[in-house]
Length: 91
Image (cartoon, rainbow, N blue to C red; front, side):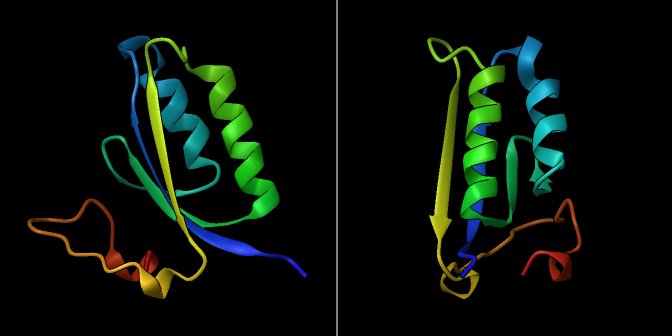
C-alpha cells in the first residue's frame, strides 16, 4: 500500500541557494508563494525531497520546515490577498 502525505515546505536559505531550492522543489510540489510549496507526496518521494534539499542547503545557515498531514482535508488553508496560484489546483 502506497502512503501519500500532504506536505507544506517553507524555507529560508541563503541568496545563492534560493533558486536551486525553488527549482528542485518545483519538480515535486506546487509553488504557492516565495519560499512556500505544497502538495501530495508518497513517503518515498518525501524522503527523496528531504535528501535532495540536504544536498543543496548549508545546514549551518539555512532552514527548511516541512509540515505534513496524512489527509489534506485536515489542513485548513486561508489566503488573504491575491493567491500566487489557482487554489483549485491545490486543495
